[in-house]
Length: 426
Ligand code: GLA
Image (tube, rainbow, N blue to C red; front, side, top):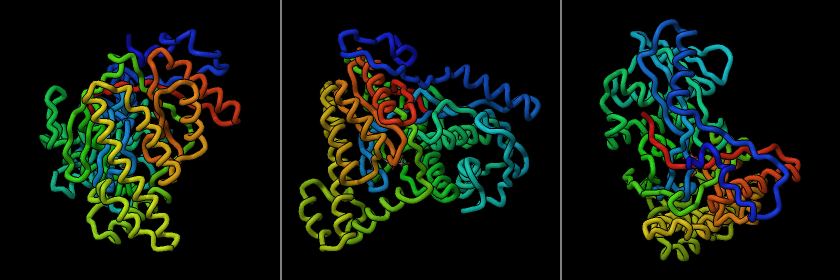
């Protein structure tokens, strides 16, 4: 049975008191449905047919948070929830964009794109075209319609899904030869596309994020988690089949909104970079768990910032080690053995990295109390989503308990999905 479509089918009547709240599930559109939506809208607003339809997934990260910009390891999976784009190339530099989530249209002149010139979501799209041009690829303007079932602002990488969908679209219409085919994706070419997406996000959209999200959307594989080494950009595909072990990954969109283009995310990154300079290393990846005690001793100089750096570095180094241990459990055929690693990751993100919030902590605590094997926030934090590893039969029970806890606390109702590792952009 496909857990995505009917999580309630796995309800375990012995799992405890009946939750009172009925959880809201975020359904993934089928590929056909997503494509039909953007095609129909395209014909309506732009007349005629698009050159084609492309799509790219959002992601959840299993473990390895705030490690990517430190040259560390991360382990995301691509979600079945995707952003769809119907696109038709133009001979000039004009970009016209319509979104299923917004009224009206947006227009950008590609020849004027530079840091700070494009506002809002079109900055990710125009930024991508700009970044491809910067990398030497001949890319012209286009008319495009986008629509998405990746919840926006939920920490599930709606922005990377948007960039990656346009990356494979522009690759196809301009014959760049980078993405390969759906059956035979070209990983090296996709790494080039992912780099362009990151430049778009960092330089044009102004969000100083690392590269994990774009790698997940472009380089993940169905049925696998993507072990991403951010030091050299290399990847390993780790088989990830929770259903075979009667387990499921419950994703909770807390609806606490976050943005990485402003504030705290960049502050965390700057703090890590400053600590690396003080330690005389290129990235914090060079600090192994063995070297950690002496590194922390060096950072603790009695100043408030030194104190902050101690905690930030302790998170990054221990988190990278947890990715290694997580993968070891998977490779030993024990996906149920990762619970303590997930819990420790959350505590580290809460206490040392300080990127959780009330909603994320409540989700994790409630899920654990309701029987989850492990739970943690996922993505950048400050809001967004959390994940819980649960027995397949307990999906509905744990979701109900979290929904109840939010209702009791007077918080916005969260939304849920069950994540299975899906296909990359195509
Ligand atoms: C956000 C960023 C990623 C990564 C995560 C934290 O999702 O976009 O690059 O840093 O936060 O792991």
